[in-house]
Image (tube, rainbow over all chains, first blue to last red; front, side, top):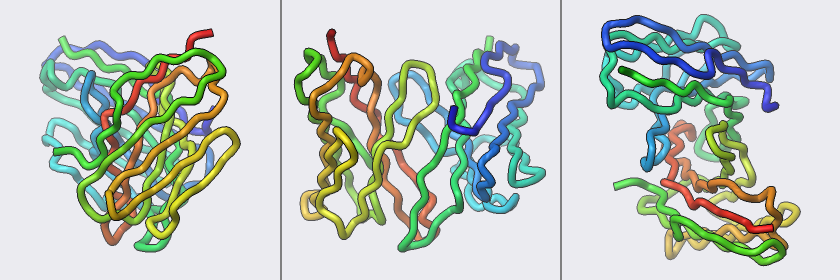
Length: 117
Length: 112
């Protein structure tokens, strides 16, 4: 266990549905991340939050909407998704977002396997 | 094109053998990290090497970094069946130090 939990672990949704992915970290970290992992593609950084403030939006379509109500919780709200959005969505946290001289290792949750039908 | 690219894409070895995986990248970096991922699970951080370091050890892991060649290697010595997983290099760049870019990974299979 890495101290980062994600729910649900598996999700099947239609293209017109609205669902949310939840991530919770119990490590006292200040930064949280969403990644998308598709088959045979590198892990893609989607969003980064530092102290509940979004510091990175990596050109993600608006059908993905993140929310960070506090430093321990991160959500990814999904609506009108496409079949190509099917992937493993990974949440991660780190002590901070780092600086030029300091980088922090990221702790990952187990992921949510999303299938869009 | 992606920042980190691992080589080989897949590697199959016998238990007890050493496994070497390579990573190349294209732009300047703050540091480089290696992660492991067991099938369908989250990633686990293995080791971080800073841009001013050349070699780092952690248990059976040895990582080297050659910034002139923009490459890194991960060596796992005396491999075990439990080392079977995908291994990713990740480069961190940018002023914020948080823009982590992962390669496509090397799938390692260690046969018992």
